[in-house]
Image (cartoon, rainbow, N blue to C red):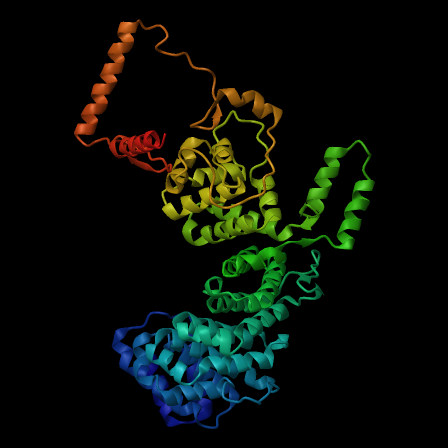
Length: 560
């Protein structure tokens, strides 16, 4: 009934009546996302009628009402089939100011029309394959970049930027060709990075360092939304960058990484928005070549160094512990480097672990990022090792029991999701410089067995990557407890009485044969398969392992 009345008025053609009836329709169906199939034909005709109205010279308020209803109707994929034509797309492009290369955005009265047109294009492109093909034909990505350049430094048109960026994100998500066009032809990487700089109001203090005002106000909701859309678009543009990275691109990637560092150190209007902002920053950092991530840490500024020295001088000379606490808490520092961004990533990772769900989507990106940073950058690895795996003192509890970051990561090493447990184990392994003995000290053999089996390191040794040779120092508490630590569980156990000490030799032989017979039965019934270690440290059936060792011995004898 609503569609019939609206269609009748739209066809009549009087602008004032059209505006009123469409405004009523929009108010009534603003939250409608599912439509009755019985009225499908009427909605199609209403869409066609609205496009015919939009080509006429009508007041701005009437244009907005038409576009609002068109946006609501475009949520229905079936309605879009007959109305998604090149002519209709061009009408929306004209209203969104996407056709004029030199036209400025000076008429504030037109801004609502531009915003609603972009919203309609977002819905139509997302829901219609025909619209996606027409977007390529009409070179929509280039037009969107031109509109962004007009408004990149103008904060009062943030809604236009936001929906321009959202449409750019959708196009680059749905078409791999557009990603390449954005990256190379349209210079999307520097353009979108500048959009982020504008949203964050960045002031550079050095080539890759920005001024951070920790006491400044949070980002506004509009700036936060713009930044999130820009981050998502940049993710699509750079999704394959780690594969095709050229040395000539290093500067641009470092600038982007520096902007993302700034992003991690600021907050949005709410805790939820801050987490969303940081989540998208983490995803984008995963696309940055690891050699360019060194800008996430930077030397302490003169002001920071002076502030720390002043704070320390105010403490009595014998307060060594308090001085260390002040030094760490005033600024996250390691080896003269500011580690604030890395500390934010670590806290973000811990929050995602504490959520207890959606680990693959929410946790693995930040874990992968921290792993690669640790593998490539020594200062980052040593700082994270200090935070995640501090020197062991109390080993009375199992490694997976407790509330520390180490305990939480060790629990993930036996998670049911293979991808999650692999990346958690890999992160801890890298923090231990890929040394098996160091990893086992912090996790126990049982928790680490999966990683060691996959890497062929069950017999010990270390991984393939090179790390500095500085040795870990054990605490006195650990050294004293070490002889009684259960290597499988990784914690201190009281010496247990040996059950065979009080047996006679005949009883021992009887129990041994009983065990052999049980294992033989399980093996013959294929309920259990004896396994052994090959010379390269990987697991294989026992017979094959023994054969390989026999071949090695024979070869050695022949050589002698």
